[in-house]
Image (cartoon, rainbow, N blue to C red; front, top):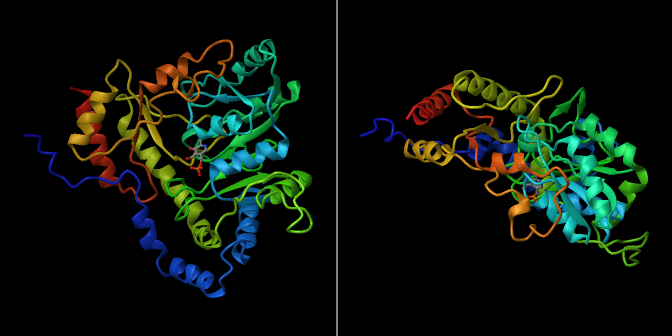
Length: 382
Ligand SMILES: Cc1ncc(COP(=O)(O)O)c(C=O)c1O
């Protein structure tokens, strides 16, 4: 009998501890909204957008109903349409490519780098060739700051500007992270993020935002999120969506943003503790010089086809894990007919069989981490 099997289960993400910490502040914030009753685009929306802009240094922030909508609204504002090719990694959450297909354009899959999990800038030029051969117009790149780590934005900006491509950063997992002195949100032509509850900055439902420094683009986003409205509410000048962040969620997020820097620091401490404890046991994630991660996930790699066995051993000890992502997009039914850029996506295929995410949140204490590290040690040495 495994003496470690009877310990209480560990949460993968601990939203409840954060809720306890925020206490009355959240109750009062929600009560203010239920008192003034402006549930759609109430005053908290503008306040939160201004706070977010201040936090990351973007000129404009337009909140919306989800991270997926944030990506879609940005593509719509840019006029991405059928016949356009949009380059994105295959090793990501489906929404990154889904929005491209939703606006009628074609996602072209590019491989990622094994050590950062992020799109390989060297894959973009060959993929542009692939798109052109297929008769598509290369229009945009959607890099993803996967697991909280910024993509190689300078290299991507260089290839984008050489080829006239629009860069929409998918910072759904990375918002709050820093790339060479700049916070995500202030990089690329536009950035999208998600406030899904499990995200580093999550709300109590769905929510998202688009960031941009471009005044006209921001105006278009404001129109698009309310059915493409013009200067008069009932004069619609374009096809849009009903995609607003709920005022109650903005009220929640205003309170959460206050503790976000402290939570990012706590996540980073937990990541460092994992790195020390797991050194030489598994391939631990690395952070390139000049970058920070917000550790949306702490994802280790276990090669040799042993990942699932290790996950099962951890589960038996009450340590939850998750696999982000078991099937790269180019292999999924909904996406497999879309092109893969020349050069292929071999790293994405390999990572899908090796990655394993461990519990990660701002309230992870050392005792719990010691238990997790011990369980990993036992699992990999079997
Ligand atoms: C990389 C990435 N892009 C987009 C999204 C979509 O965000 P949402 O779930 O808020 O629509 C998510 C999160 O789920 C994500 O992880």
